[in-house]
Amino acid sequence: MTPPTFADPAAYERYVGRWSRSVAPEFLAWLGVPAHRRWLDVGCGTGALTETVLALSDPEAVTGVDPSASFVADAAARVTDPRAGFRVGDARALPLADSTVDAVVSALVLNFVPEPAVAVAEFARVTRPGGLAAAYVWDYAQGMGLIRHFWDAAVLLDPAAAELDEGRRMPVCAPDPLRALWTDAGFTEVRTEALVIQTPFADFADYWEPFLGGQGPAPGYVRSLGDVHRSRLRDLLASRLPVGPDGTIPLTARAWAVRGRR
Ligand SMILES: C[S@@+](CC[C@H](N)C(=O)[O-])C[C@H]1O[C@@H](n2cnc3c(N)ncnc32)[C@H](O)[C@@H]1O
Picture: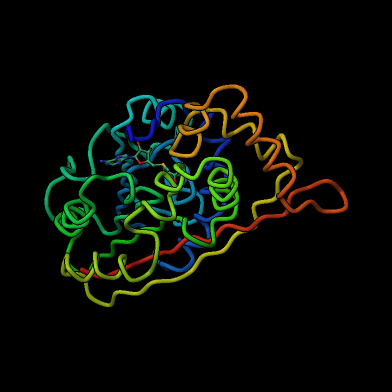
């Protein structure tokens, strides 16, 4: 399977960027980092978590790092707060000196890094002693409703799609592997937490159309299908999703968060 594409900021926002923005405040409340700290947002994407840090955590500075030049450009154009800065870079070789950050955070990234343990070792390297490193990932296997419904329907039509199901394929989407990554990197006071948000869709189009944008594994799979197969998948999903009396689709999404102290 080719790596997922992260290159179209607007399509990404409509697919899961908007939901990452809903998780971020809960995540920051759980971290409880004091004001006037130096933050690093690894895999910042279009800036969902960076913007929430600026809005809620009164940072001294936030640096966002992401390998996608178009996502970094989008974030830099939208986030004009002088405390924020964005750089193209990789989680496995962070462009920062040792022990220079008070809080390293990373939202929905670890499953897309080929060697997540190398990335978390980098988090430890750049965190100052006493500082914090933390992350969240979707619970692809169970609690991430919008993606769970998608793969369950896709596999009914095409059993081979099971191999692409993020719930099976993503190595780090549950508390135990998160805890192991943090402990192995030498962090102490390691904790994990479930963060659950509502992800209401206005109607079926609001649910389905973001899957046509090609950003991430499930939209990448949709893009690989022929017209007939894609229409059958759309119709099957429309028949299986729960619909409220007002036509909305009331799903929830769970992310697993981890934090540890250096
Ligand atoms: C699902 S998006 C999450 C973006 C953002 N953090 C959010 O919460 O919306 C995954 C991000 O991981 C980035 N990414 C992929 N490989 C990476 C790597 N090796 N190092 C850092 N970030 C990476 C992608 O470019 C993409 O922006």
